[in-house]
Image (cartoon, rainbow, N blue to C red; front, side):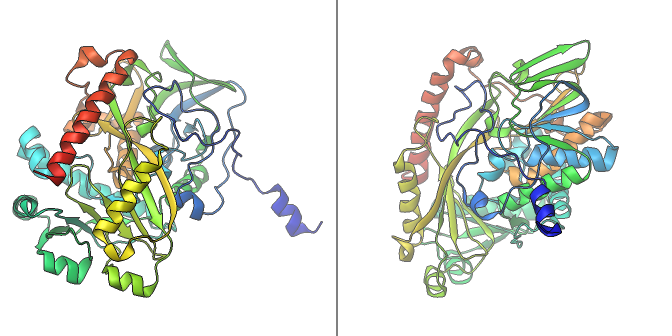
Length: 478
């Protein structure tokens, strides 16, 4: 065996999966997200290349300064900022494979947002001063994100975000929001009529006009996650897959995190588990998130003629104005990706009809692509907070527990900023953060007494079922 072959043979590799992908996993009914499960079969995993090396599962008891639970975008960027800004080398615990959850199942759209509310809704809820602060936080987050990906080959598609009106009645709402963005926030949002959208931007046959905002970047989610993993480990963080936290006790200020291979004794813990947060992880997190499913499909590579006929003239990220919105774009390899809402429960998620809904919606927006081959189809959980805004917070000042959760589908960009802010909290500088998303807990739902118990999860899902039908009525008929 020559030297090159020997070097390749001993090159560190990612920990292999020990269990298959579970298509029906549901965080509201499963105690943990599993142990060592394989990735979902997403486009991002299928085209990102070999996963980078990690540090293997926890196999004995250890003492650490900081443990991060979850190795997705937020967990890894938290580890990066802890190392770069504060000299803290975190230990990252992952139940399955690195970046297994939200980070490799999303739509790859980095938008200038931190939750599901618009700027006008920020003003109504928090007042103008706080809304201006939240806007500055999002702009700073975009700069944080751009800087982080500068040396990561994640196929960036910059240029902005096109917000497409799916019905004529939505245009006055967009025009009002765009005026507010320009005049109050100094953010150059522009309005296009339907003809301009279809002639110059995208041939979405539902488009009745659009608002364009200057910030927005499409990325390859798998390549980004793997880039974050390499960067975190190069800075001294350790990342341990197949190490789910199956028990959590706190005694005398030390957190005892029990994994199958050993107990991690940590002086501080950051929770970055997104839509895969188990209700049993910690009492502070029980029922504070409503995980919802989102489906995504990716076509085969399109021909030049197909791209031209469909009017796919931009690579920028696009969403429509439905409450149950679609997100879509033409990717660098000329495939079209589109996603939207999915099933209510994990048990129902594998049903073929949810993929068929997206195939139908794709053909409705781009009739010339009806019947095009679909190469990838997947679904994943989104962490939605009960007031539609994230929290990066220390819920109990007497305990060194922190979390960054609740992005509501806008985590591709904001997870980078959240990682920076969570690192700031963990390093002891969180008191400097005064915006509402930093100073309050994730809220309980309004019907608190109904959902305090795990036994009432079916009622939450029943309510979600009715909400989806009401949203569909609003989106398509009213």
